[in-house]
Length: 159
Length: 180
Image 1 (tube, rainbow over the protein chains, first blue to last red):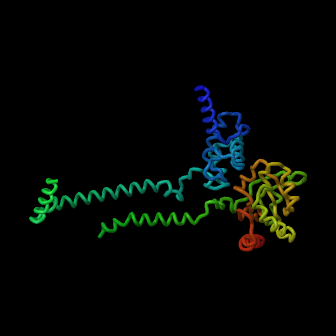
Image 2: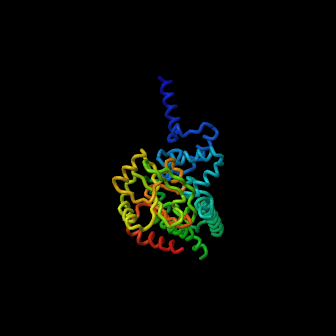
Image 3: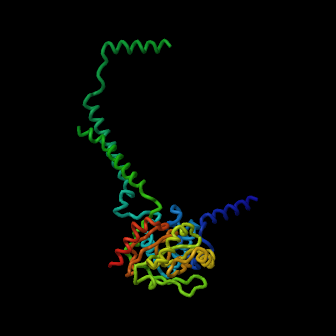
């Protein structure tokens, strides 16, 4: 029984990892197929938008998977295949936006925010330590304040 | 005074960010980078004919005059919206309209579709492999391109062509391109 569950689980896991690629699409050469899978994982399915063509079972995704394989078989490098698709669909077809002037803020904005935040914190603490250094502690209590403090403490003790 | 200004920097940055997002929200995410193919020559293609016909569609058919290239399919519901308009174009001999039929389940589907709704196309080619639709950066149907005499893509229209988009954008462009 345990064995059966294990086998079933393994089968499901395998199916999930190769959800959309259909048997008739797979290339005979495993090395080329591996490259095709690699390229497909970075290419956006243009109708489902947040899936790669490797994951999507839409018609266009299938056509694109086949095209990727055709081109790899014909001797294109992974980059050449990607470049071709970008020349047809724009950067949108890449799931990971490329680093260029238009996307610099996208890529480095968060890091920039962290740096700015750190600078802010450093300035804040430096100024505060300077201020506390100048005033050398709090001002002494006035006689009136002392009397009130004692009264409060006594009240606390009697409870 | 200087330190007060410093205090406002995060607020200013926040404002800039909000502005950035506000502009982003006005953009339609379904409208993609439609301009990558603009002013580029068409890629080579040679498409097979519709079942039962003898002539398909090649790049040489489209070149030579200002023309429209329309990507459609019998499965495409929105295509029927522009269909009557296309029939009018043909009737009045306004401009050559070439059709690229794609993603058909059965080769016969498009034959029946054309028989039922009429055939507004000058010529039709069927893209069986999907090679041509990817080469034209197609994401759905209908999509219509304006191609000039030299075979350079000048405009891409996503979705059905309406009277308004024809009057305001497509027709003025065609007139302009014909002068060249």
